Length: 336
Length: 162
Image 1 (cartoon, each protein chain N blue to C red):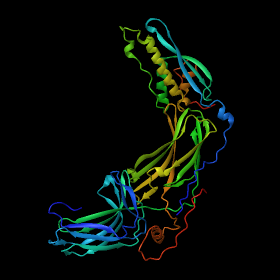
Image 2 (image 1 turned 45 degrees about the horizontal axis):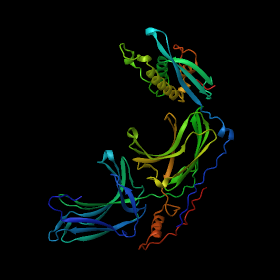
Image 3 (image 1 turned 90 degrees about the vertical axis):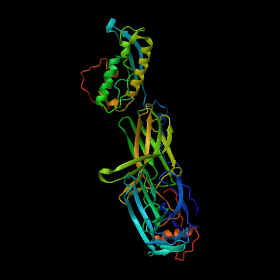
Image 4 (image 1 turned 180 degrees about the vertical axis):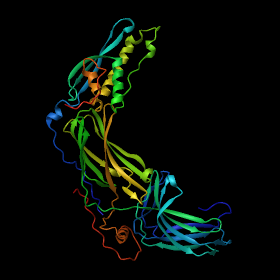
């Protein structure tokens, strides 16, 4: 960030080399606003240029070096001072010296590993960004540019249904079933609730999607639960033998993929909560974890970086002269 | 890149037995608090209420029963349940201390409209409590609803379904 005071002579700008063709994705900021950022996948090259503009071309700009960094870091809100950087790459652009006119510096971070998905949550944030710095004696000139990273998963080979019998002895017995245990973000949860015994007066039944963000380790673990969705599936009193269908479209809700123990710092997990409410407002519930995955537009058999690049090339125009990996056939998403 | 449509067909279900579909439900439980009667004379007077239970829940020994109970019996039941079970017991209608003081313009706790209000509050209370699966396991609830006399020196215990 440039500081006010003596009037900064230098201005920095970061521009990606594929800014025209690269897709942008929406991502929520910490304040809750939705903004669009350039979208990257694991293994993709991050390249562009740093433009240094002198506001007063007559004055020289003395500096102690210019560099550009690519950083992936985890920020815990209760511990803002300590950023945990899990990716940190640097390219020096200029040795200490002085400038008398504006200049442009090209940079390229080749095949950068981006192991985790960008995430902005209630107590933790994981972000990737480029940072250009002009080091000076008193204060540096800094410019940051955030990008968004998505992690893609292949269609899981084993995706069994969830089927369970639960209840309160002699009062309420139900059997619930969800068609899969792993869903992608635009998937549909298809299921059913079968009533085996109903000796209480049920008024209605709903299914909730709960997101649990876990931060901290050991004795300092903190869970933040957030009910993302409440969806009524039954209104009225059921009797023995009735089957209530469930059809819940996930695309309508703000969901992220399941994130397990990211860099040993935080987790984001999702649960389906089946809630029955009786006439006296008593609540009976059963929580079940479901795994959420982000499905790629094109199936990759492996997550090698060449395959990731190939999918990017397949979608848009590109001037890369690298060898292309043959594209994979589109997956058939029918029921198993 | 063809967009594949997700399969949203219902899961296979067992057809429902028609007896289950059209027969009486297994959750029938109705408790009426009715017929308030004031017994005794002078300062020893008190009001009793008729508690009528009609149910088909197997945990209740009698499918139909009628007993008479007074307000302090309800207080006893509430304190037993609070102590013995994990149930959050709803509140009773008010104790009406002010109505028990002398020199009132009306009939105090024997005032007709007060008894009517109290009767409705007791009915709400007992229905809420008796429908709670955990409260149904308590001996004190069954004694309150279906035993002729409440034995206040009983040993608290849990009922196992017959």
